[in-house]
Length: 254
Ligand code: APR
Image 1 (spheres, helix red, strand yellow):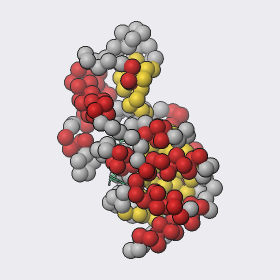
Image 2 (cartoon, rainbow, N blue to C red):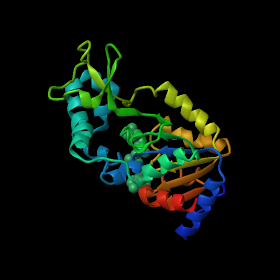
Image 3 (cartoon, rainbow, N blue to C red):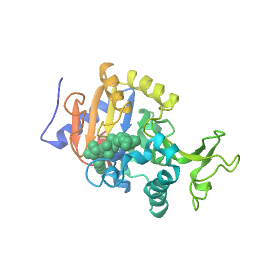
Image 4 (cartoon, helix red, strand yellow):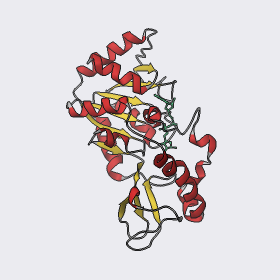
């Protein structure tokens, strides 16, 4: 594997910018690190959500067996936090939106549920783990904007059929939305440059998507604060640092 780690960050960023400038089909694959500079804590590592809360509260079995407890954690970790803080796209999100607008970026495959790629202006976003800005009724299947549902009493009920509402993001043990799953595989198979941004690569089946791009000949560029499960065997370029700072530097050179 031709592994380029260059001591000189400038040099690697220049090399990546010229590679991307010559690419016809770029795909971005993002994780929690993409939104860290928007103030959203990651799941693992320093300040990670799973250091404070048991991931079991987001297990689908647990959710149906202990709905009240699961919902109180969900409300605190996701909705209270979002409603009480000014969460908005950071410069990294803005670059990916610009690249889609310029016709450079085919799509974003995101593991994030924070809706920030869409808010930033990307329209081709494959939400591998769903999206917290919507609720879905577990009884009638109707979807509602999360903002339209009061969460004073938990669990929240469907305004149409009074069924149990669930955030429209994927719990552990739940299947991946078909469109996102097959769309991501298709995008990975047909791109010539694949940028892995801010993900530890710990969670399957999302974590197999970069390997598919690699197998199909794409150049793999990784941006992360620290090495990940991909750095050694998948990434052709590893740029260590904050995605909200590095993406604008690359964009300035394209
Ligand atoms: N810029 C770039 N990378 C960053 C930044 C930043 N500013 N801040 C943190 N990172 C990196 C961390 O080094 C880490 O590798 O982002 C990664 C975050 O990893 P995780 O917290 O494991 O998030 P992610 O990989 O997206 O988790 C995947 O796990 O719990 C599930 O469904 C949840 O989608 C999530 C999935």
